[in-house]
Image (cartoon, rainbow, N blue to C red):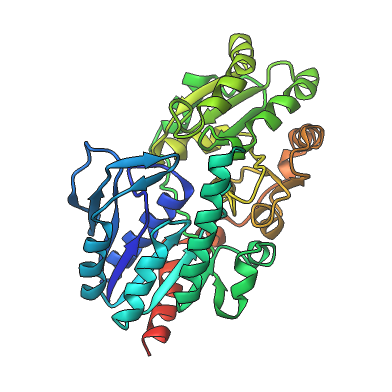
Length: 384
């Protein structure tokens, strides 16, 4: 099968969407399919075309970036050629160009499947409000033209104003999550570097430093946690500097974080590779996902943590709450409630031994090959 995957950003850009797309594309390639990823050349240092893990990646030049979107004048020309050459088209939304891609697929008689990752909710402002409306219109046009839609959970679909309109042609697939085994001695080396085994609890956060991620909720919860555990440590893994569209947010919170850094209870680790994350998770006592809005639909890192028997505290957002609920590995707290987050953390620290799961079954459930097989069945059904 010749599969064309289309999305605005692809690796090495780091986000839950790009990681999902990369894992799925690799899995398709390993299962013997010819896979092409069409994306944008958001960074001019990236090659226009390359092979990555058996996947052909084509990057269309960008002439202008507007907020988190891009303007790529030749996108349509390249899309027409690639849609014609492939058997099925998979689009990752949110994506401004999705209606044009879906229309081409329709005209050429190629099935098109939309994978809807989350809502796009930009910060307040007249221009961002306009962008949100345009993207919502584009997403709806794409859904009308698509043969089928996929999202992470039924919980997210039921609570999404967008997805609930298309429930008759929508199927939830759990996302692909994979984490390599930690290299010999790496867990201990990480513990030595960051002093995680000093009889103090370690709170992990693995994400971009972005407004929707709820970093301030954790900041507001820390004073209550520090009263009980004066030496608690927060380790933040992920991009925290020069995050696209998040400078105002960072400028607002960094002075508060600086005080905690000086106290020795907050450390930024930067982006970590999968091998580094495999060493990081066993050094946590808990992972927090205090996300604030529907731009977060699941939180893949929760499953990665649970694969290491690390409990999670997640906000009660549709979709985001499901990993904890499904696997009984942590606590769900009201959205934006720092007091509830502090209480949940203290309870987990006191009873961490009760949080254990069947990690082997978890690995199998979220294995990229398992998810790719579900997509295959859907593609074959749509191809008739």
